[in-house]
Image (cartoon, rainbow, N blue to C red):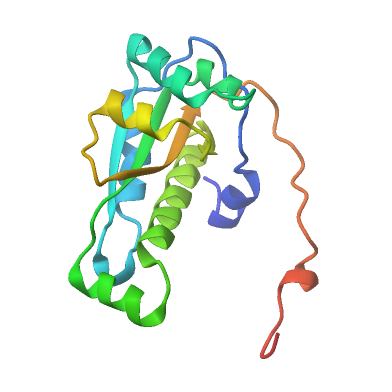
Length: 179
């Protein structure tokens, strides 16, 4: 079993999946459960996760995700998880207004990170997508007006090897006591 740091070091944005590979429903449920358990401001839980796995339906989503040459690899994903911004509780809304910070968007980011780390733990490749035709995605998923699909996570069996992560040096991005 990998430590959390090892998961964080291993997790990458996979942009090539094995065509036709499937992910067991139980594995998908554990991945989404990790996101559901993520912390959120004032426990607002401003999210809804729509899991799409049916091959015939996935093809329509792929058309709404691939655009201007972006995200072509999604055609081989075994599943897509739509991450929809939902209304949050009163405390989170008030806190966001007072502190001038969009807590619900931060919460979605945290939940998405949990999801992709859980996928890594399950041996499933993932890629977080922000480039897609939101209007078409909402139509396909039957998402009500007034809701936003903020992110989509593509999941599949990674076709490529792990890449060496390139990050800024620790001392360049971390300081103690003062900036």
